[in-house]
Length: 430
Image 1 (tube, helix red, strand yellow):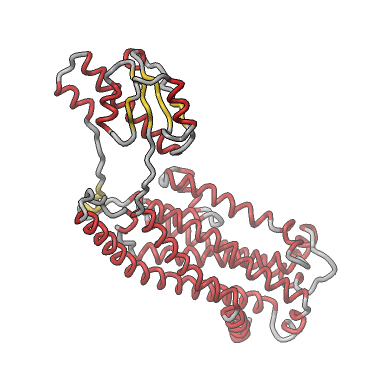
Image 2 (tube, helix red, strand yellow):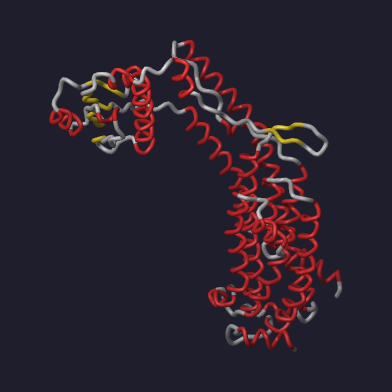
């Protein structure tokens, strides 16, 4: 195999695709989309809704309604002097959101509460009302039981958990498991879609060259294995270029947007306090982003590249065996199934990264790119597992590359219809 020929194919694939309108548009739109989503997130965080929901209360206990009004006077209003039909009319006329009728059984037993309302407010309003009612009924039950204030305080006590990680060196560090769980899932998603996306690039390119008979000219001066290798490396270099631009753009935008958003929200809080408004809530959590270690980014790139080369050779083989993109559907099953299985196992690894299924799946070469990077982001994965998964992926790639080269060598020059699995098996045996 001539590496010069591989380089020429690589260079052609890379330059042709990097200049395409689709590549340029996707490369620009992703950072722009990030800015738009970030801006929308900030807007939603600082948005103050002027919509109020009023719940009328017919209180036959004469104790629950005052507690509810004291808890939230804008939401609850005592309408005990009105009949139920009057409240129904107020709801129909949209003067109030809904109403409840409270009696002694709600305190003395577990009688189900009933809210008659217009449907406004959504699940958040329903959860808030349920929480408020639970609290006032509990307090009334404690008072009637003549429980001391100390015991009442015990019932009102809530327990929070603040976790910290202990390193092998004995140092305590902040535990950002929740954040890195999201990061791990995001990285798994990116590799999942990237394998399909860039693998599809290669498959469509092979089909296009085969359909236009360009491949007959190319193979007169380049061996099929050189053509296959050049295509894979060229599209791989394209992927690295695109990801590199995205990462640099997102890191740069994050470093600028975070402090800018915090400053804007602080200014808004100061202005509202000057106008006599209550103090603004703390900055949203998404502005306080923990540091992502360089090792995690390096592992992400390595597993992306290993997953790409492992699957891209198979995508190229599928393209060479088909005469059109539509005909590839019947040949995609052996490649699609392991990717989809890895996708579903990723959700299990997200919940339990150290379980036997997660560990074993992360060592299976066809699952490793997606499952292992999710585990690495969430938990401390032993280095021997990471190294073993990489080694197995490399060895598997050698096998799939040999297999794909056998198919590709015959398939790119075969016309007249899509090959069957029986035909592909015959090509491999030749």
